Length: 297
Image (cartoon, rainbow, N blue to C red; front, side, top):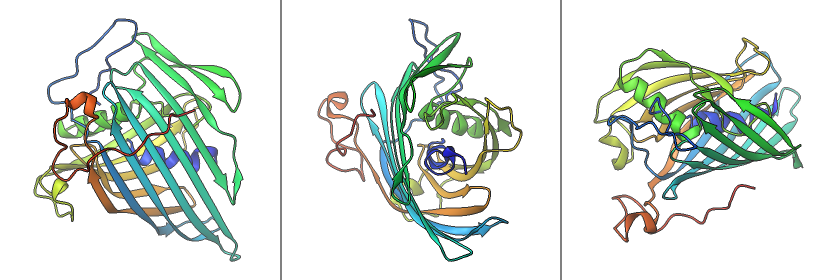
């Protein structure tokens, strides 16, 4: 599977994750509509289990995904760790670990990113750099695995903005959208996406977490494409139920040769940064302070 397959795919699947407009760099700004979803800082842990196999070699799969979204005042910090173990038809096991981190300015102007992955203990080349967006498009400056620059199309969205766009479109009753996404998981720039919006679910929702049970939710399916090759076959597909605060559950990750289901096992809200809140108390169900954040390299 391509590099995006494990580390990147889950980044897409869970952040994947918009106000439909971006407040932009170099002094240009577009105000988000009043109905734009408000993202909730949170920590979520998903148990991953095999849900279907195809014609490939994989016959079993299990693992865990930990996802943390933290409010850093003017930016969102996202961290994601994946551990996935698969078994082939011959009985051989493969272990994949990925560590993904980004810092995304809330005005849509920039994204600092880092994606690391190991397969059976052998590290793949790191993908890292910084992307910037303006009214006339943007650019990515990669610092790893090799220094190079890639242009981004007008309207390209970063991960949190992308998640907001998907939820906002579903709440507006749209059936499909196809925004470009840049999340820093591939070396070729933006990914093309095609999002099917499969309807809304009114509260209360049957979920074992009180902070989510009272929120409406939407069901979505997303296919990701390599814009650089114009290949019409998706690199990866995912489905999930999004609550209107951006938390996902009932996750389905389609790697092509096999699919895994992600069950939300642990969830807690995180407070906004103290300097943003002026010392205010964290939201109900939250924790005293957010976890320490490592800066993306």
